[in-house]
Length: 403
Image (cartoon, rainbow, N blue to C red; front, top):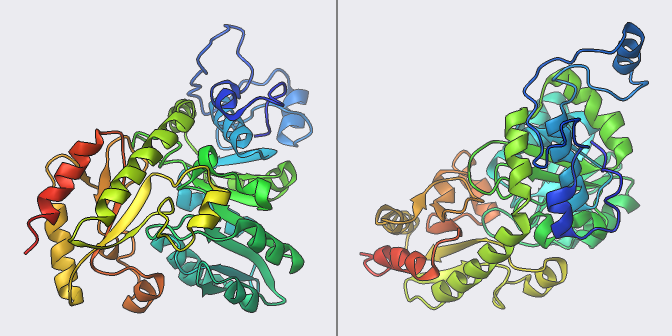
């Protein structure tokens, strides 16, 4: 889980292909895939020490695996954290974080613009166990400050957000949290360490859905928490062992390989997303485009300070009158696609489009959707690696024929 010795001082692109556990006695150059649920122990005494945590060594698949360790070490190196813990999905990573750090009577402040399942998990599910929470506007620093209580233990933000790409001031929120004796966690799924490193700006925990850009080709589910070695070993590890929220070795190996091309993919897809955002902003059927790389984005200056590029995800509103008309128009654009994919995932090499109001945020109440700014005419685009003209042509097929 902790970083590999000898990687200090290496640059991100090098860490992406070199940070991993030591090679086996066979000297493999590509990291090995260890498919095993158990490990033969060298002696009963060594086994006892390992199970007691007094000696390093693998004991059981639920407690650790060399392939999973390689993925954890690589992501920790890329994020600039001491350690990382891999989980079965992004949502399981959030679940592990909350179970490890919170108890009945504690309070969480989180952005009302976060992913719909995150809002439901923290705002509804954990409320059943006595954990209080307050959702605040993502970009309103005063609202974050006002929401903090004496029992606040965690501030949690997603930047940029899904799907409106709102950006928060990471350093300012970290300072707020620390001044209140709380921790600050950042969902870095959209930007990834290729574009943004929250730990360098004061964050305590970085959460990832490895299902997205860390894998990069829409193949497997994965999640991760990056933090200090002390937090991972003393807080996350005991809960993970008892709950079983682990990442399979095969999925870890796929993500491990995906990390090797993360920097190249994110920069290429960000450039293509920027080009598409500019084109959409000029289209007469589009009311508004949400993309941090555009000068028209409300947090453009902040995002360019925190991120090295605007990212690969954008959203746009189709022009419409009533919510019913907006929904029908958005559906028309999506139903006329011939090249691009109507798919709720993101982070693929293929461009994926979705209608957030009826998918990722479909289980929220209308009031929650409105608070998050999710209208019926909103379409999210996770830009892949197709030729930009082909992407524009496919979108134009629907936008140019709106009833």
